[in-house]
Structure formats: structure tokens, C-alpha cells
Image (cartoon, rainbow, N blue to C red; front, side):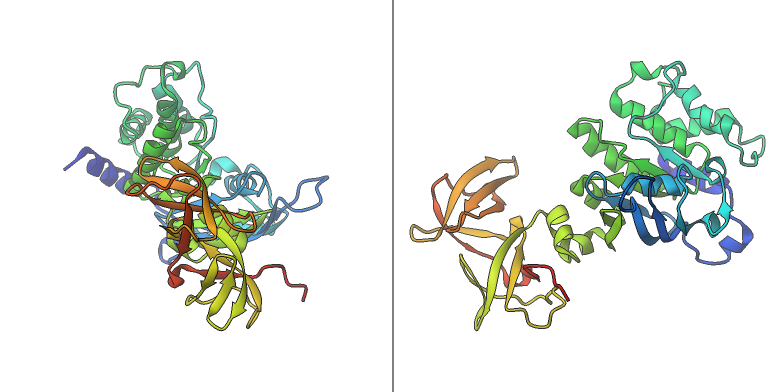
Length: 386
């Protein structure tokens, strides 16, 4: 039996059991119902009517640009902010809203911050144990002492042998592991992570995001992960909540979000897709680069729009050199596993394509572009007024 398996069994066996009424029903670990928060002096809510549910062992990413309300929502779940309306429930227990309020330290929630928030004068072991010493939950048996839990949490994040080091003696990735161990040591039912990897270099970030997912899956603890990085959210999550201006734009699996974006904002922000103006014709949709057909169900709620925009993902554009083609390669970028091309249409519109490195097209090359009709989706070319 591997060390990770042993730790997983030990964590699951000793984790504080939920209330009897909760364990008898399949209630979600986290349930938000029309949660709203508006700060004084602002014209619009920072979080507006957000409803979602997270189940045991799932990892949810809150994805969106800066200022969309991700961190505010996370802070309301943690108990650092109070919602003006709506309710927050953890493991079937209402902790905020409609007269209910449970303080942060009593919510069985672990928190991992962007800046690590470690005590510089405490060692690794002391930082991890600090959360246990301040925990007001009912103490476990003598077999579950603070040193035992501290040792298990440090082993879980792979920092054995570094217990006596101070934060300044650790790398950024190691410091974030200490912060994660401190959040996991009390065995919470939910861990909240506020852009925990944004201060790390790319290679550390790629490695650590996979480790965080593996650790949470090994312990069976649910997690809410705030990020503005699309690739990070797609790779780490079971569910993604895309937010925009305080509202929930789309909630779904990474595959659903990427393959079937519910709005143009989601398509642009998550998939970084191209958009081509098009007009309906007998053969399909006429664009400045040719006639294209669409077989996928359109996302435009209007029954038969005459004009629309076709969404084309970068990796779905097929380029073929053709001296008489209307599209020209403006620039090429080598990204290791692929090329990224910037293409210029006759109207001056820029399109982006990603291809394998098998054939390199130089700047100035004219190309005929095509795309699988199953890959195209339709979006309205302007908002409806009625």
C-alpha cells in the first residue's frame, strides 16, 4: 500500500462526520441560492443572484476576468463577507442568509490565499499546527493529536524533512504547499483557494495545479478554486462557473464550457475563438472568406437570423497555401508543439489559427481556409432589443 493510499484511508477514516441529518440525504457540500452582494458607493452588485451547488469530492473553479466578483463570492462562502440577500449552505447547514450566520472559524472551511499568508517567524510545522490550535471545532480523540495531524498534513503535500524550516527558506511552490497543508490539517469539508498559483512561475504552476487536484481527490475534500486562467480552470476542475460583472454566465463541465459556450463572452474568454460576420445564403453562411455551413444547433434564440457571427476555434481552422486565396498570413509564432498564425482577411480582420509543426507557412503566404461544419456555432451579430 502506497503512502498516499495510507494517508487517504487515514484522512477519510478520521474526518469529522457530518450531522446525522446530512449523511442520510445526498445534500451538496456547498449550496448557494441567489446570493447577492453590493458594496457601498457602487452602482452594481459585485455578486448578483448567484446559485450553484458543489457535491462531495468535486472541484469547482470560479473563472472570469478581474473584477467579475470571483473573490467576493469566495469570501462570502468563507464567512469574511455577508450576503445582502440569498443563502449559503455548507453540508446542509445554513451558514449565511435569512437570519442565519455562522462565523468563519465554525464553518469547517479551509482557506488558501494568493499570497500564502504564512507567519514568517514560525516554522513549517508551526504554521501548519497554527490552524489546529485556533480551531474551535470539537477535539478528536487523543490518537488524533496536533502533532499527528500536523505530520500527516505535511506528508500529504510532500514536505517531509522540511518541518523545521522557516518560510524564507522555502521556494514559492513549497510555501504554497505549506499553506495548503495548513488548510487541510483540520480536515475541513471544503477548501477555498483564491488564485493560489498566480504568484508562481509557469513550470511550478503547471506542476502544482495537478498536485492540488490529486491531493484534494485523495482526501475526498471538495474545493472551490478562483482563477482568471482559462487553461488552469479547464485542467483542474470538475465544474466551471464562468462569471462576468457579478453574474453567472455559464456553469458546466470543462468539456461543456469549451465545446458549447452559452454566450459570446464565454466563447471569447474561455476558447479565445474567432468570429466571422456572416449572412445566410442558400448553401449556408456567406463570409468574406467563403461560404460555410453549420450543422450544430445555433445558440441564437432568434428562429432564423439573416445575419450572424460564426464562431471558429483557433485549432479548427485548416490552412492550405493558395496563391489566389483572399487570406494572407501576417505572422507566425512557434509555440513548441504548434504554430500560432495571425491571418489577415480582405477587410483587415485578424483571425488566429493553431496548427501542428509539420508544415511552416511564412508571413505573406496566401492561404485558403476551411473548417469542419460540425465545429461551427452561430452567435447573434448584435444584441436583441426585444
